[in-house]
Amino acid sequence: MLSDDLSWYLVLAETEHMGAAAAELRLPQPTLSRRLARLEREVGATLFDRRGRSLALNSRGRALQARIRAAVNQLDLGQAEVSKLLDPETGLVRFDFLHSLGAWMAPQIIRSFVANHPRAEIQLHQGGGPELTQRLLADETDIALSSPRPADPELVWRELYRQPVGLCLPSDHRLAGRKRVSLDEVGEEAFISTPAAYGSRAILNDIAAEAGVEPRITYVSNELSTVAGLVVAGVGIAVLPSDDPHIQLPGTVFVPLKTEIVREIGLIWRSGQGLDSTPGFFLADAADLLGAR
Image 1 (tube, rainbow, N blue to C red):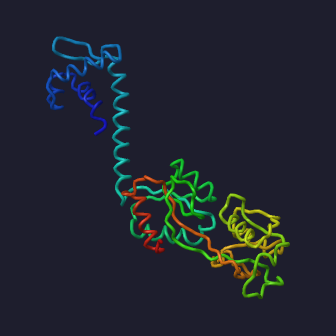
Image 2: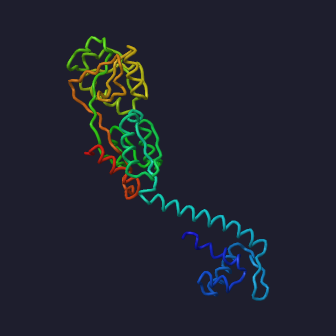
């Protein structure tokens, strides 16, 4: 145990007898005497009053005894906690995911993992893509379900799904009945999108660049469901995932784009991170569930 380097003093303080303490600790008595002498030199004071062959714990020794007992207890608790974390069946996985995946993909992954590992612990956090990346790099989380594929070489990516993307229009829009549409046909209209650092915004920018247009973004929201709601309200149009039922709101129509593009969704973790414990089991379950590429 980590506490062994300190616990000998507790035995000696309890027995107040060098021979009895040495026998209980299974140490040669001279070894125990040297330990006590070294400790007293380090603290700069005697901890026992010597009475012939007997020892009597003095006030300084009792003060140190209380502190060492507390430290030993904390070390034992810490070692037990580490052992628990190393057991894949009872350990902890910290799982982050995008807001837009919190209503469908993330719950599927969590449900599968809990069914297979009911005693494991999961800590959840939702956020935007840039935030999740920073949390991974800062070791504030183990695994993130995110999009797009990260550029940072310190992060590892495992693709889970390629989500189709379409043009989200109000149902009474002039192009609502089209089979396909090009972005240059709506280049002058108001767009609703996510913040500039988000993957959804990058998709819009890529499609717009290919079509030779610069989208006029009038409203920005962190939530794709809010973006879809603003389309329903008639204040703009948006490029959104076309197969997510949680943003296919009444009053909207999704028209496929002539430029076919997908939103890459995958799991991200730190390069070199040990995956032989609970986070590794979590990754394997998610990959099996969704057929990782």
